[in-house]
Image (tube, rainbow, N blue to C red):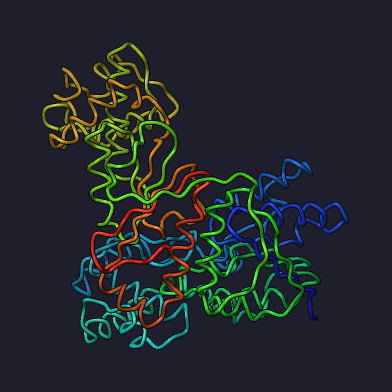
Length: 503
């Protein structure tokens, strides 16, 4: 059966997910059963939002929305795979010992399923996974990614991985997609909604196509101009080539006029794209050229500092530390977050306040075992996780020995860190739940936004070389960067000749 297909193109801030959710609500109101509707997205966050909204509006339970999932979760659930069959955790560690290569075993389970660690084995695994998820030749992927390891290493690793999984009867996330695609019995849904379609890999598209065999309607939303994961196997051509009725969301509720114009100037340089006519908010906003990160006063308001690569954020991070500004770095929790919670918890305890179990965990991670915590209490095993803990309680029952000011108790800080935290305490920022300033790579911030955004235009030599051969990828990356700004955009002048010309 051929389904009716509606393709929804939404530029940044136009409300793609909101539009899908409204359509979803309309279909349920028309009488379509929730258990026969699938809502699939690239991230768990989007799935949680969709599920919560529908449950609240129609007084449903989570059991009624069985097919509101990421694509990997759909395959995992449909195939009835148990956790012991999945290649992760201890199984990854076991394989790393056999293959004699260091691996962290960290993966983006809720999105791409790809390895995201930075150990040598993680990079070998990432290359293997990209090859299989994009259905491209392994050697071709290895060459394109310009991996530091040799082809012989990659070939040995990939063959060893196949043999290991086979001997242990294990599956990784790409294996699950393969099995689902070939499965005779799959969920028969009336309607499917697909969000962030530009980020789906070739294998993920094949999963969607299998489900589509039984559908009456399918709504597919995305923005090809924001397709920045081609290097990780994303297949934007599939999204562009799908036949169906096209709807373009007309207004960005995020971007003011000046930033909208710059965004359009960049997107028009992309050779492979869907033409989209869309407008901005009525206010002007601002774009400012700066020559040093220190030209920007970030003492107030919310900020994003964006760079093409993580190492390019070093000066911005150092600046925030010197100024005593509370910041976060990266897509995941990093060192500073842990210390913020630990120091804040210690101050609260000494004021006579209580802390939660999660705060206690962070605090104990930052205290030396031998001098601060009685042997056997570091792991907090058998402790009531629903309890609030006072200083007296910790001393009497949870093995706390440490005494003194936080500088004497918290272990692992360098002098620069200590100065930063002293400034944070003095300003009161350390007691805020969320940092005002976030430093991130452009790939790590996709979907995010802020009133104020600083974009670092430097790129590495390797990226610059690729840019001159195939420019579309970098046009899309910096398009994503500038469209995070809701009010003010600051463009940092490049320090090297290898840079992206923003205007």
